Figure 1 (cartoon, rainbow, N blue to C red):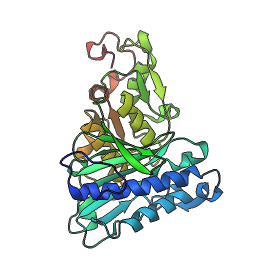
Figure 2 (figure 1 turned 135 degrees about the vertical axis):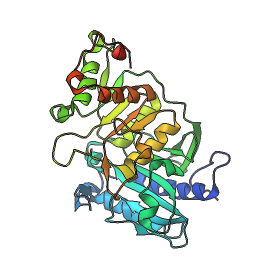
Figure 3 (figure 1 turned 90 degrees about the horizontal axis):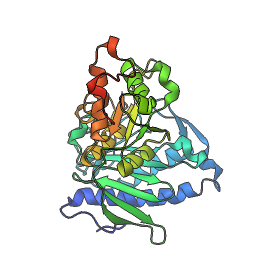
Figure 4 (figure 1 turned 45 degrees about the horizontal axis):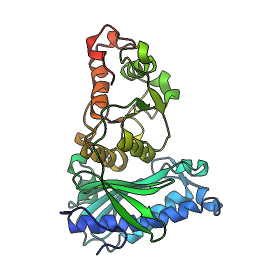
Length: 336
């Protein structure tokens, strides 16, 4: 019986619906807690660092404990979170494995920027590690809750993603329907341009050709977006297309990218591909990557399929040719 979602798409597996419904209930409660940010200063206070060395907010820890506690009697056997050192057994009788970033973008709480929860569901294997250290293509479902002007839940139960909106009066998520396919044409790209000097040549060339606008090989002007919240960036791309890039770069600790494969990139990549987009590490499909450890990182490029494919072509060029303004090269004479 659903308690927070008002409906699920026809044919949805009951076990997946039950777990996502429980996650939705926790998301609704978390949304209320976040709205009290200015009234409860402790929520934005530092809580030290997590197992991967990243700074935590008190609300990161609160959210993680709430999700794990609520899943102790669910179909979730294994719980793999950004905030945990290793995979935790939630319910020995469960047959699913949950990967989750309980509060993505928590550093933005103080600035009132949209943040969210990212999750994915695998079939449980014999051990926690075997359950979650697997390619994203094996996910059964994935989604995110976004806490912004509108609290929404976007989830794929294995098919086209659907969107829910939280009704603040009833505290239930109302199904608004399936998302349309990601549009192929958009003049928006998202990247942290302050790291330009650290990028490899193919990424610099791709961005240079966007910056060149109508005078460059794309023959059109582009707008750059950078929210520094993966959930917010994903929500924008699902809504109006475009591309997001978080490449690896030359800085210590960033050579393999910064985003986590298991509980950030794989679930988001799953959603994007189910919506007709594409998600890669710059070259290879991110859903084909097999993580070697829970907190493994990867470069991440996702969005409109044609735009993501175009980034890969820049990596195929000989290094001597990877520079901007290929106005005479037919390969790059395109608005993508």
